[in-house]
Structures are given as structure tokens and as C-alpha cells.
Image (cartoon, rainbow, N blue to C red; front, side, top):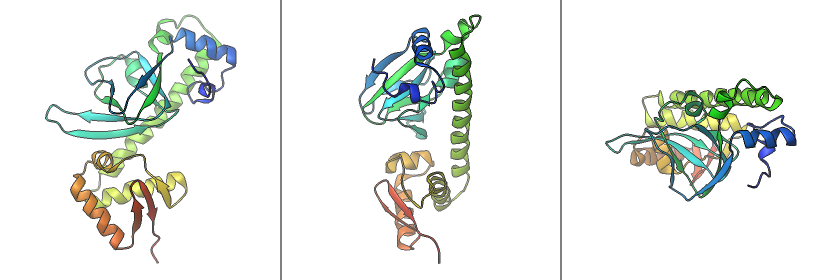
Length: 219
């Protein structure tokens, strides 16, 4: 397993090389590769492992039995997924799908809880890092609720694009979604969303090409 860059990730932040080695061994860390659109984790199953994206990206989706899909979040390189389900042992309510060819590092977090009597410096650091990761995830999920609260298609688009501009400190940026994924994320119908984007462009509010956007400041 190639550990290059792993020591700099949020999950293992603050660990020495020795602590990282002990941590990975204790958590039965393993790397797996997936092709674009492969299902990594399936709703209805359980997992004991947190997933870290080593390369590529994944999407967290909610798919129901009637074929409706909602994209809940995008997980990029060095980001994580399934930590809450792994810690609580709950049944997954979402699917995790490869957004592109990717490599995932799985770490069995349940081992950490089952071996809680044995203390070591890396365990304290790992638990602290997991808490921070979970808090960041809560912000992401609450952000989606904020973006989908407006009733109009334009309101949802403006809310999302404005948030990305604030996060990147720039009015020109790339978003992590294609058109269908953006529509699913904002709980919109793709055709209507595309028409609204065109109207916003014609009105001089935005410029865009594929996933690259520029917000035009009003005079």
C-alpha cells in the first residue's frame, strides 16, 4: 500500500510515522480500486470502516425503490465517507458511488472502539480528528438543506453558487458536479435547471462553461 500523502490527511493529522504505522495496522487498513460508476457501499448494508479517497472522487447518493436519486454530497481526494455509520454500526441509508476511477483506503474504526481499554497517543489523535471530520460533514449536509430551502429553481442555484464563491473566496470557480449531479443535489429537474441557468446567463448574472462558473457582480 502506497502511504504517500496519507500522513498529511485530516484523519491522521498530528501522528508521527511510528504512530501512523501502528494506527493503520490496528485498523486493518486496506486499499481498494474502483471504476467510474462502481457502487462502493450500498444502502441497507452495514460497514465498520471509514473510507478515505486516495485518488478520484465519489458521490453520496440517496436512491429510492422508485428510481429517484438525490446527490447528497461530493467526496474528493483526501476526504472521507461513512464515518458515522461505521462508528454507530447503523444500516446505511445512502449509496456511495465512484464518481470517476478512484482508490479508496478503508480503515476499520470498530477496532478502535472494541480495543478501547488499551491507550495509546495515536488513538487520542484519531478520535479528535474523527470528531473534526464529522463536524465538517454536518456543515456540508446543513448547507444542502440551506440550498434546497428556496422554492424557486433560481433561488436554489443562487444559494449554491453564492456559497461556493464564499468558500473559494472567488467569483470564478469550478463546481464538483456535472449537470445531472447538480440537479440531483439541488433536488431540481435537469431540463428546468438548464433553462434557468441559460436565463441567468442571458440576464448577465453568471457566465459558465460545463462545470466552470463566474458570478457577475451587479452594477
